[in-house]
Amino acid sequence: MGASITLNRYLDDWAKTSDTRPTAEVVRAIAGAGKVISGLIAQGQLAGPLGMIVGNNSDGDQQKELDCLANAQLIDTLKASPVAFIASEELGQPIATGKPDAPLCVAIDPLDGSSNIDTNVSVGTIFSILPRSEEANGSANLHFFQPGSKQLGAGYIIYGPHTALVLTLGEGTHIFTLDPGDGQFKLTKANVQVPAQTREFAINASNYRHWDKVIRSYIDECLEGTEGHRGKDFNTRWIASMVAECHRILMRGGIFLYPGDDRLGYGKGRLRLIYEGNPVAFLMEQAGGSAITGKMRILDVVPSDIHQRVPLIFGSSEEVALLQGNHDTKRSTGHRSPLFSRRGLFRT
Ligand code: AFP
Image (cartoon, rainbow, N blue to C red; front, side, top):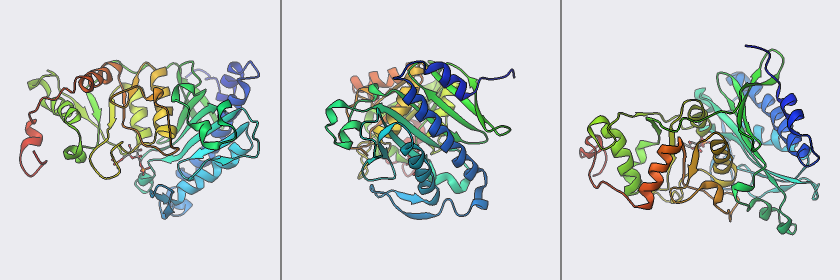
């Protein structure tokens, strides 16, 4: 492949004005932290028990050793950046960096998919860059209670067979691959475009009996394949690492669903709006895809809690639009696909 431009060169070319340079600086800082985290993950068990449970975060989710190491690495580097407040999945409340007048606020999921660490499955760091909110009046939380449409930048670093940083600054979604040879992130795919149609869906089917009728009917019709209403066969994937699902969808299309369900605590699904749903939605829309709650566009949701969950459906625009339409009309077929209708497999 011809010489790819580096992330640093891309950011130099993009940040031509004083109001864009802070965002570029934050992206550089996160990329630097990502290289350190990538190096740790690449060592596997040689780096120690990275998947060991060391506690619980404020929301009761189990914290692994690597969750904490990644969080510390990112917090340190962001404190040295033009950032006033940092929100993290691993911290109960946002923290002040000691620079109250800095122009940016950053929300992070330091390590999404951490339950997969010991199984050598791709995991990732997710980030969302917001302008400070002039209405916040010093309240850290209020800076983060802006809709995702206000984001200045967003992305993730996926730690997989190779490490890649996927970034949007509002001018398309681009992929930068980490070159182990010189430690530089290099542009390997500019202006990613998600195919508008797909035959591949990602959902945790073990929750079937907990979904609402619209979701169940949508999945039933996918499973009925050519014999059913859709008239085409579907494939399914579920990696249980959203960053990995997102990357697959950016590369070849698909639809990801983590809807709300009737389990205790899962009424709004599992994924968090501010540091998971919003950055992924920004990336998807910049790549021609879509992201909805089922009822509305993710980027229009106004947060009211740092760790609030959101039903999350994203991917190929025509497939997401079809599901949005089903929600709008509360379309449900009322019948069960053969796979789910047999007693004992899933409650009918
Ligand atoms: P962990 O970070 O606890 O592994 O959770 C990962 C995740 O938030 C997201 O990346 C997956 O898509 C989703 O959870 C998987 O959830 P289920 O385990 O309920 O399928």
